[in-house]
Image 1 (cartoon, rainbow, N blue to C red):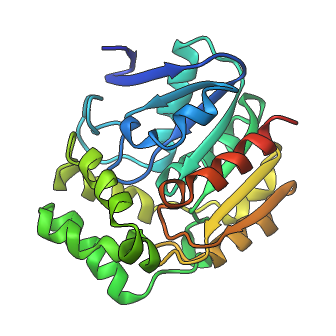
Image 2 (image 1 turned 180 degrees about the horizontal axis):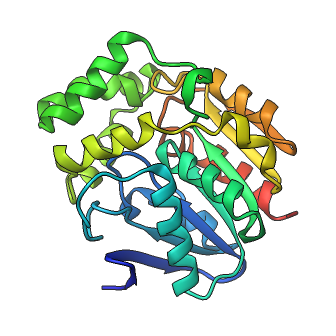
Length: 265
């Protein structure tokens, strides 16, 4: 099993393809396996590095509370261990928050930045409806299949759920291979609650692409506009027919946008 050691953390990672390095960072509760819609396309153009965040799936859990900044340091540690001096960074949801911190603290390490269905945090973020937040909190607190099923409309667009249930089922099947327990999910949620980059986004030097799903109930697409306005060199793209899981729901469109953006960087 490929892994590196960063402090007291053993991080599982995978490397696919050849070319310029592209680091993919997942969000709450998900792991390296969830990049299945991206790997065939992206690994044809880049050396794609995927990994499990601390406490998730095959990576170890050092225990205790942690922050988004801590996870950014984990990712920099992975780059160091693999001898990667500079890379394109793509983060989704919580992973997008990690990517923001990396681009702010280590501008020389980030060649291109892609932020997917994420927000700046703090008082400037646009929050989800109360009903959506309750479903997420219930999923985190209970960790049961029933709670996960109840929260499905927080993650997928209604059209996907109704007309393409196999897309949802495939994602669920992958999730159950290495399910994240309530303990680590709660600590990740606490890290997200402490995230706030609004006043520091102008420090980002890398060209950025901000992607959002037009039907994202969990992180409303207005958040993408805030990021694109605050980051000096950012392009904004709203993805039709996509909820919070646009990389799964609209994978072909997203993959094309990612490749087109990065190939000229």
